[in-house]
Image 1 (cartoon, rainbow, N blue to C red):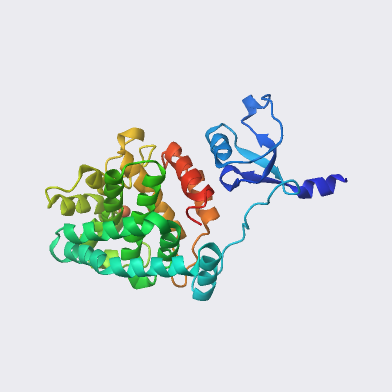
Image 2: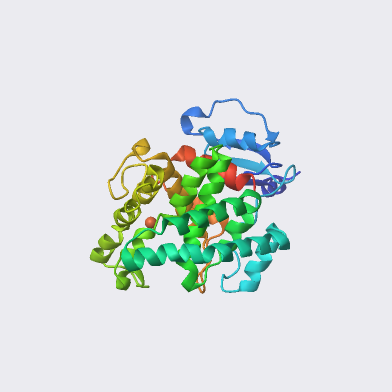
Length: 329
Ligand SMILES: [Fe+2]
């Protein structure tokens, strides 16, 4: 076989692109570890991918003749082509699952909008409506998480806020379950995801609705939304501490460069570190009219290369338990 043909069969890929069924021919390690022994192998289980992701390996070379190829790296269809989006959803989920997801989203809409409206109008927390919406999202995500998160990606301009709240809630519920947390903690995650940005509702409308770039002053005001949300949620005495933590700390970064406090590493509460991942994942993959969303692979690539932003251990778990295992497609 000529060298050119062999090269055409080999592809260097990043670790998050690994899938069961790929044939790994080479590992790229940091320079000081190039002497480690290695035999080519076919990936048989998700736990083998897990092990590679936790290692110091930087990238791998796969042979697409001996195993499966990577997913298409091409950008997805223009998002305003609703038909293309529908086709994409149908290739991942059944028609029935998509319909069920749409019904759930419609059923939760009024309660989520009451929570947002109450915060906007009176600065208060409509806890009963929030709890009702979370119960619904929890039961819908039980059997239908991928379709629910997939359908919620498609946001018309007047739906962005409530669907982002719903999507982050569904992602956190599903991630929490896949991490093995009990249902009480999963409920706290779901409520935290639902209300993480509720403080934005108390911001001046001119800043919230501005479509252009924010000035430095406006950005400063925008960045007060975690504390504003904390104040809203604190008005109800029995709001769980975990939910307050998600709201106040979802913009903290693992390396200490986030806000509002600049907390470092595990000083950031566990549930807030989970929220940071789910919040950014939904923001990157959201499909808005006239603006192309990133594909899942592009979003993951950005998150994996955002050095210092996320808890790496949790981000690896998100990849293996949410993406690689196909929960979210
Ligand atoms: Fe936020």
